[in-house]
Length: 599
Ligand SMILES: Nc1ncnc2c1ncn2[C@@H]1O[C@H](COP(=O)(O)OP(=O)(O)OP(=O)(O)O)[C@@H](O)[C@H]1O
Ligand SMILES: [Mg+2]
Image (cartoon, rainbow, N blue to C red; front, side):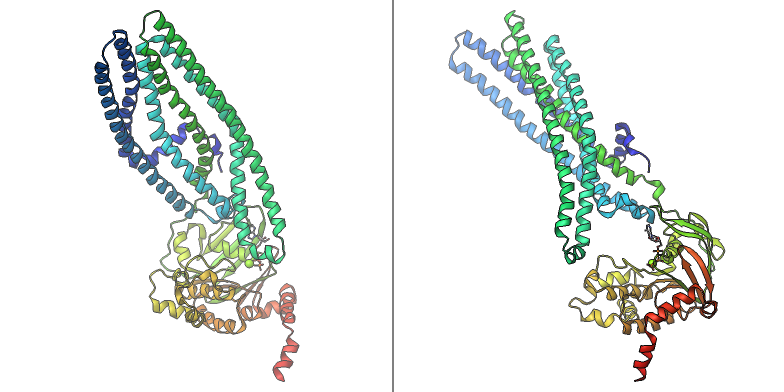
């Protein structure tokens, strides 16, 4: 993955603009309101100066109270009208801003999901993308990017504009006063950037902590049975506490630094106020300004400094957002993770797989296959045999194009598998997985995954073939029950029903009956035998009954093919297959079984 931390603000801005573009009308509307708002914001200062000066004149001239009241009435009306109008403008500004924020947040969230769905298996099995970490990264990314959009396109401009208008009025009133205000701005920027630099490291560490922590909690929930049965509650809680303590320390440091810098900024601002008072008082005393100028300048200075203070908040949020958006765009722009697909769709299809000298290592570096060559013919039952960890499931992963071989070739009907249209290929493969074959949703939804537009009758027929229909209808909610609450064997049969519904020409069965009871195994074996005819079938199994019928047995050991042939031929070789088969048979305690059956 590229180092996205080098992402500059300008690049980020460009990326965000793509998301903002569809809503540019909203941006323009809120900007127009901003300009009106900035002008209105200066009204108070002007009115106040006028009031103070008028009142001074009135009291100096010993005028009546009545004349004072007229003045006050006019001022009150102006101020109230201004506030009313200002409230309307602000409402519009906030509402349009928020509307844009909500829409864009939706777009971010949808785009990232659409994007990661196109990524290859290696992306998901990489340790940096464990589900909890990925989730946190996406969630925080969406939140902070949305905030960033708001900052860039809704918040910053009004602030700048406010400050800008106030500065112009100040310069117009008096060049020196304007200069003092102007000189405060770079000082603020300097302090803010210093603060950001100091905090950057803490922020990045914090992101890691958050991801690890969330990942930890998800892991905890997933393994709760193991934790409880081994009474490891306190061990787990200590593990969690360690992360929590690191986080606490980090948070405290962050806060401490923030408060220190906030104080410094406040002091700088007050320093500015003092200088402006002194300067204005000087001009009042030497007669070049009226007394109203003091209030006038302080309010204007406030109009300059308040936005700049806010700018710092935005600056902080932008810094945060950059950190999370780095991670977000790293996921979003991971072009190298996109699953490659060829374009080849065959007109005629036989279904012969040839694996030629394939080496393969998983993304984490585990080498799983070494110079593997094998052939799977259609109309034949192929069995992959080998001890646990030999690489059997890995072969299936490669045939399904979940991963590409590190070197070597896989051909289907003589054409490189990489050239095939991946969707077409998978549409023609039925896979019963060894694990994780059920997803969140009802039983019916799970079976329907095999064929989207299947009728209810077809679903029931498939469930009957998989010998699960009777059990499903016993459930309180029948086919609408949650599939994840089914027992292990029931889940496996649901995934077999899905295969029957899909009815594909290529079938990969990875331990299809591992979690089934004997009676279900026997019945499903019949269904499977029926569907196997005229197709390319690969079965992986540790059970004798599954492999004894195979016409082509391939024996894998530590990622290498060590034998290939028919069951009889390999058995007569008296080598690896012979040993494995005998071990399987002996584990069944056949003699005792035989005797029992006789009696
Ligand atoms: N997603 C993965 N990432 C990294 N290594 C993996 C992954 N899946 C499997 N491996 C490793 O690859 C090797 C082969 O695993 P594979 O799942 O193919 O074994 P198997 O023959 O199917 O075993 P079993 O009979 O236990 O299912 C093992 O050493 C395993 O640890
Ligand atoms: Mg396996």
